[in-house]
Length: 426
Image 1 (tube, rainbow, N blue to C red):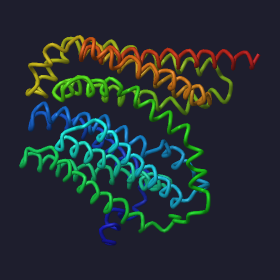
Image 2 (image 1 turned 30 degrees about the horizontal axis):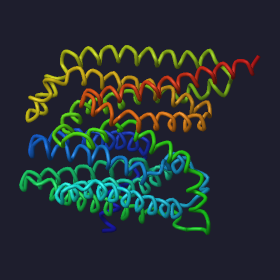
Image 3 (image 1 turned 180 degrees about the vertical axis):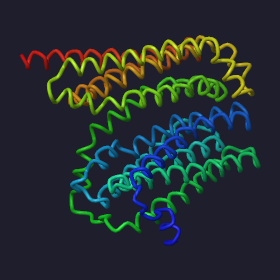
């Protein structure tokens, strides 16, 4: 096992930076691509009911439990280059948050009275995501030690192994519950090999746990954690409403038309992130003209992409989705208005991300949490009634309203912050 770990680590050939970039891209792509492939595969292999269960369990409840396990701590961990906290302390907290996530997921299943098959499928897929959350602690430590390529390798190998096992077992048995259980076992095996064994071969990892440090770490990240949990609920409120008010088949359809938002978010991230360092520098130097110009350029790019995306959604979206999800093409045919609405919501979410990053640069985190709190209450109040009123279209409309609210609130705070900074400069 030690030899396997050293094989994964590889030899230092002097191209560490190149390895970091290449393997991070490979791992991130496979990780993001897997959920789209799996949702299509389950619908095509096992039908719309199983597809709906998988979509909700994997992409909604499971991912929500991942945010609990994740605890919003990775950005803090990877930037803690002064070793304010040891890896042992980060890992100790992560064990606690992962246990909490698993218990919350099981509690959700218990109060909803699912059938045995559905309940076990959902619990297995939640457990899959929780293991992912635990692996993230190890992968953050790899990155803090300058070995981001190990994070990429872990993501790549674990994804290939678990997805391969899941699809093989599903194809043989045609039972989502058995395939989900097998995927958890494969995910755990990949985690042990690519993370647990590998990190023990790194000499600089500090496993010390000091008294009170884990509690302090928890307190330091609680606000970020709560913001992340509420943010994901807002993003997924329509899916929760579909799950509560409609059938598993309807969830499969809604998941299909919702899938392109993942691509939109990925593209938005690629467009926005290269500007963040420049924006941060402009803000610190009180160069408001350049700061506002950067926001304007990004807003223009997102606007152009929005027009393109809406045009493609109206003319090509449903035909393309019908080819990918041929088992539910009959239901997708009536979803063009809802699909366009969701694409619009995804574009508004991209604008929201731009303003969110701007607020982070402006150090307005307390206002971010306040906005999430207000819009989170809106999500609770409107999502189920909208779905009861107009089904899938109602869910799409609720999603647009919520993302628009976030965009408007964040945009207003950015304008206020810029004007305040300009007054202070004068």
